[in-house]
Image 1 (cartoon, rainbow, N blue to C red):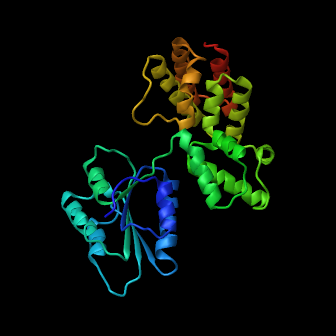
Image 2 (cartoon, rainbow, N blue to C red):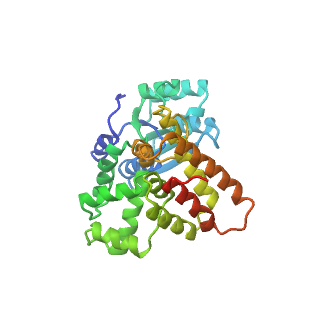
Image 3 (spheres, rainbow, N blue to C red):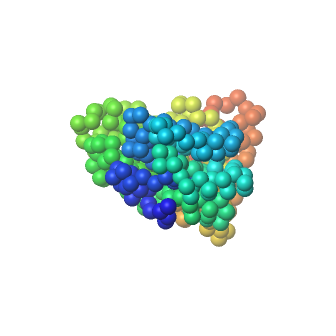
Length: 329
């Protein structure tokens, strides 16, 4: 079996040329890339007559997977078997899987998915040695545009290069988010119209929708006017004060670590890639004392939400003013 770790883009080009391996292992939690890769496989491997089967080792017994792999019919249709939670496979079942991979069925294509990427993991090492491994982690910001451009081209959307960059700035917490926004705009203006910055601005102005990360960014930049505008919009569209307080707390907790010289946090931070990438910039706007004072203000605000009848905006607006203006009481 072919080994190595080509990029997902290279693999898709091979799939389009009908160079399809008997088994792939996908490591990472970017669901859009997972689905995109699986859909390309389904189109080129199954055609109109094959069968796509989904198995989750969270819900389905591993015996079902092993039985499906051992079943063989001379006249059966092609099968694409997608297996999630593959790391739940037992040691004995792993041996059976490797036995199958060494003598795979040409009419079956196997996709094994692990949501986390860990080169130290024994099963990941095993699968990398016996399948084509595919990195489907959320791309680094430098690779985000390359991926969005690739998908836009494959879907034949009419959008210029500079506008793609601007959309990534707005929605670049994941590939799915950027592509979904492009799809929504394409539906509104039609596939023949080139999407440029003027169309993006008109769509945003017509039904301005913000995301919590954009409020984090505005506050991190101490942009008071923009922060209030976004907060009002979020509240009007159903975002609760507890969610805003939690997201502010996530931001300033990471800034506190940053100010203390910890440049890389482990585990869940509550920040998307855009905000995480801007921590250095935000840190120049707040000294350590301001960050600690902000966390104290946020704690008081959290307690106040549980004991007051004030409107949401009346609760959060003073907090934003305190943070952006450096006034802590």
